[in-house]
Image: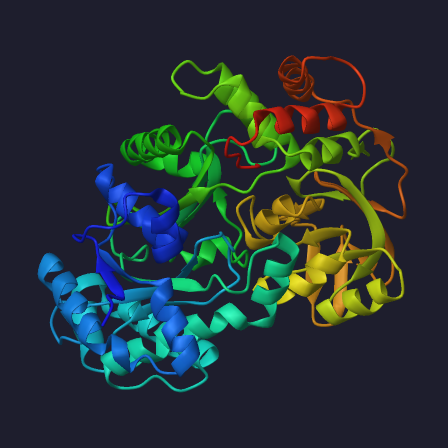
Length: 508
């Protein structure tokens, strides 16, 4: 029998691509972070080969022996017992494909609790927090697995793993893979990780940090923070988060630790990183990292800045190789509405560009309108993975809550769709939607500017945006590689790419 589960003390393939294919990006990243000396909660990873066997057989019984062994290892490392009445081991069960698919598959937190062990957790974090964690588990388990929570924690784990495997074939995941040209055959790994509680007594919370600004590429860390919360609360977009400056002001020591983690990971991958973290009772834990999704402007700015940084082993040729011609085409197509009209309201510009269309308040309305050839602005309180088909159909996205690392912001940047999030002037009260105190009806024309965050009534004719200096520099470098200058910048970059082949390239 092959091996299907790897603990963090086990040897994994040295080749990064092979490790990611076997353990998924999330799992391979955990092993990398631990090797780099970054504090990560102990975990084990169920491989994509296990997914393939489950997909063909419909059963995960073949995993039982390895799961029991790895749960025992986690418990011994932490001095806890899975399903124990005292100091229970509580875990998260998360998907992790080799290709990043943020939020498209399922996650279950707080797994392992039952009526007895919740009392042991109460001794560790407080009765109220333990009760909230247990309630959350029962609710999400029922929603995701489609069954009530089993009393046996090991049965909970079996059900959760099968449900996460199943979410690979969900409609939203399929839509995302089609949009991102990801093969349906890759499958997902599953990471089972000891929970750290952003709701623990003391200074606790959760957040996401980008090592550089994902919309502009500015070389300063940015992100969202939410005190007394668990990891999914930030990226789901349902909470109004605070900027990381709030964390930095409250706990400069933790902010310094987080900056060190960010610098270590960015130097390791030679690229901007997206880092999810939790603070539990004043202790920082890194949960996962990946190369961050970014706008076309940010992609070019980051590539040129890395090439200029003597601390990075990243050349101008690397910068040119990283930027796809489509990225420059998107920059050339960008428009600016900030000086054209007076905005009705302003939110957070989460993904650059200007889009106009009819306001649609649901996925079905957006799909129906798009099928009729009508341009759509999807207007939601926040977006979730279930909104992916509507987001794909829309020209732009507008949400009432969420920050720059919310689901809506991340997906919009990857798909180069203008987006404005965290619009406090936008409210939903039953069937009534208001913006800046005015009633907004489905079908009303809106224009959003994802750079400035401005929202306009009606269709606004935007002006052409100037090509940023970083793009001009990159095109100049492409000309040096191609041996010519001037002409169509997209063709010039394509020519440079052909001369760089067969060097491996990763398009930003």
